[in-house]
Length: 182
Image (tube, rainbow, N blue to C red; front, top):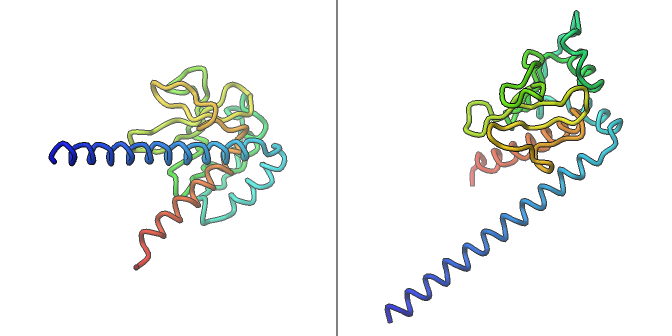
């Protein structure tokens, strides 16, 4: 009888673990599909959408402060220069992600990148947002990790804004779900 109970418990554990793995894989694939969809948006359309979203106080906290001298912006891609000429900081409300003009400089993680912001500040998953030279793509740069081409790589800063807004909205929905009375 004890052997039968033991086998039943092991089988239940195995089924539960298999279900969790499958659920995690499907969630991972769904998130990858959304990020791919965002990255496939033409840059002009991503810019248009991003500039609209940056005005949405429910997704971003932005500090507008035009640049007087733009020497530090010269090596950046055109889209980043335009954004940083207008905004000193762009911070997502739900995801603790930030583009910050003061962050522009050589990455402290990988010197071949130029840091333009950071994310998950104060957590074990803290990272820098970075670019390579004057290229458009924006990367999440983590210590001791290689660049992930699916998660944490964005076609441009505007695509990053779209993904950050999506993350901010999802975080807000999770927060609302737990703060509502039953």
